[in-house]
Amino acid sequence: MKKVLLFLGFFAFSLNLAFSQCTPVPFPGPQLTVPDTSQGLPPAVATQPYDITVHVNIPQTFTLNGIPIPVDSAGLITITGLPTGFNFITNSPNNFWPANSYGCIVIQGNPTMADVGSYNCLVQIDGYVANLTTPVPVNQKFKLHVLDSNHVSVEEVVGNEFSVSQNVPNPVEEKTAITYYLPTPSVVHFEVFNMAGARVLSNVEKGLKGYNVIYFNRQNLPAGAYFYKVSTGSTSIVKRMMVK
Image 1 (tube, rainbow, N blue to C red):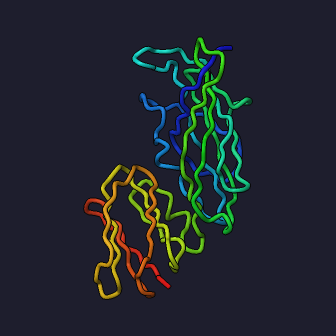
Image 2: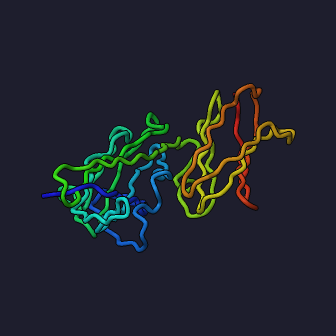
Image 3: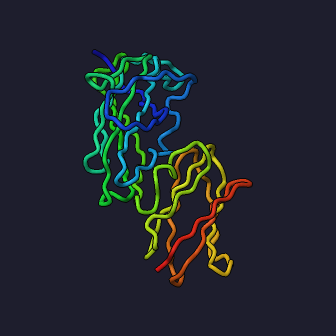
């Protein structure tokens, strides 16, 4: 059979408590990835079951240099870089889907406190198009953050509105991570204030739709309590952190 890879599209994420075969969900539009892989996966929380469904769109043709090329099929080979003990399963017996079809992948795990951190994951895909006898790999990278359950809950990191999670770790010795969610791409202002209200740090970054992470280095800040503010447009969220 002559085949080549097109794309594996990440469309939507859903949280469930039981590991089971997923059901594909068709979605409209020309997008192959909604959201795209730059958003990463929703954060996991240590000691909390993690279970997401990723919906896949395999198009009928692939356009190369303005020429449409018929797609035969595309399939998931493996996902590397996930925390220890995480697994994945698709709705297809051989993890391949034909052109012009929808599929889905379930990723599940039970992260522990030892898993807290950031993971660079790689989705390895093989696909085939007409007139090619060998598969063409198209790899997609994404990030998965496992957050400390002592400082953040599932409710803080799951939602469809602008939100900011508690920094992890807290107290801060050298560096800490602050996860925030944006419903749309936005310019984000990040500020840190001491207890007297004086601003000790101010940064501006372009936040992507979905989950983003700010890495804060305490540098020469003296030990004590601080407030950090994450703002987008007219909305600001303030949280307290400790530096030791």
